[in-house]
Image (cartoon, rainbow, N blue to C red; front, side):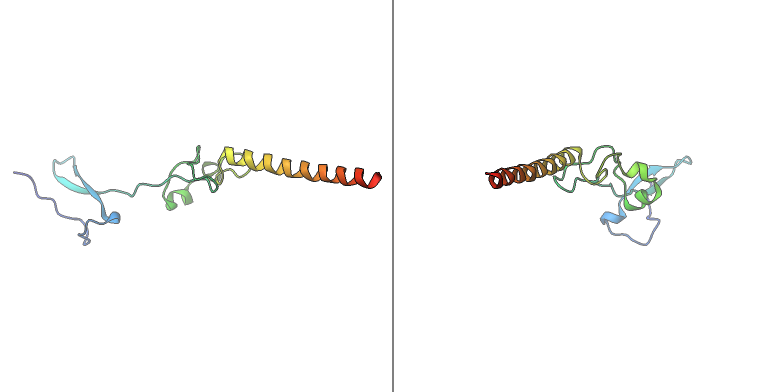
Length: 112
């Protein structure tokens, strides 16, 4: 015969926040153990891919860890992935180069 297991709390509905599993105690009895919700990993704000080097924690977990765990040592670290940062840098460089080219062409046209 299987031992009956009673809920430790008053909330009896099988909701996402009330998930549990059965564990056997050292005394040989069965008890419910609350299962924490799985955390989603942080995503890049531009392309939506997972940010590597940053752990997937629940909000309370991020509050308890230091800043170096929540970021990476790069511009936009912890917010954008490396590929998107590279694209931003290249785009900014090309825009500035285009401005210089326009200025040179304008100066050449004025000199004629």
